[in-house]
Image (cartoon, rainbow, N blue to C red; front, side, top):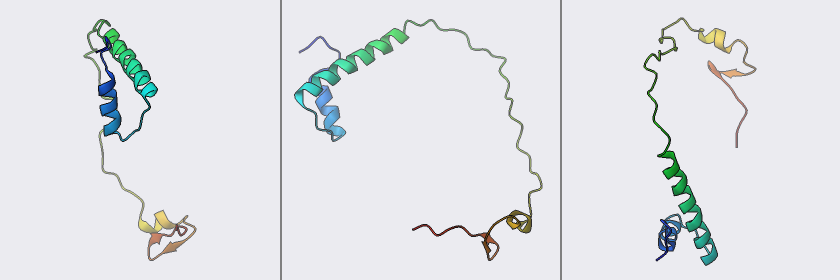
Length: 92
C-alpha cells in the first residue's frame, strides 16, 4: 500500500467505471495527480472564512407583463413566412 491518499486500485476502479483503458504507467501518473488535487483541496481548508455581506440587494427588475408585438408585426421583417409562422431553411 502506498502513502498516497489515492491508490492504484481506486484509479483503476474509476477508469473502469468511465470505460477508459489505462496503461500501468498512466494509473500511477493519475494516482499522483489525484493526490495533488486532494492536497490542493486541503489547502483550501486553510483559507480563513469571511463574513458575507448581508446588504446585498437584488438588482434585477421584477417581471412585468407588457404588450408584445402582434403576429403581423413580428413577421413583417421575415424573409419568408408560411401560414403565419417564420419559415427557415430546410435542415437535413
